[in-house]
Structures are given as structure tokens and as C-alpha cells.
Image (cartoon, rainbow, N blue to C red; front, side, top):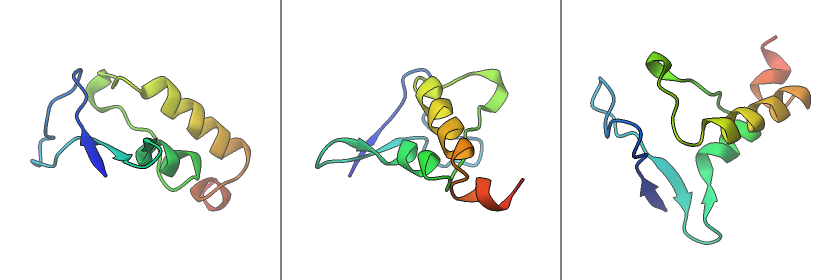
Length: 76
């Protein structure tokens, strides 16, 4: 995998966790977006400062929600 930072965001959060996009080398797939699209994660914007890929992540979340995937199937 490749860990890619977002130039619009801090490198770490307030708990010193790395803030990175996780990219699968083969095929360059965004694993974070895949988790959202499958309903295994949801989009969160901290402090009203949206990250670079927020619109595509929100689109993936709407898709997961409309198809009752993952957490959207069980948490309504």
C-alpha cells in the first residue's frame, strides 16, 4: 500500500494518529473510499475543514446508504 497525505490537512490528528489516504499499489485503488462505498465507514469532516476528496467520499457514502450497504443496513 501507499500512504498519501492530503495537502489541505494536518499530517496528524490531535491524538497523533497519521492522517493518510490508503492507496492499494496495484490498481491505485483508494481503500478509504472503498470502505465508505461498502458501508464500512462514514465520512467525517473535523472542524469544518473539508479534505481534498470529500465530495467523492460523500458520493460513495450516499451510494452505500441508498443501497443499504454495511452499517446503513443495520443503523437507521
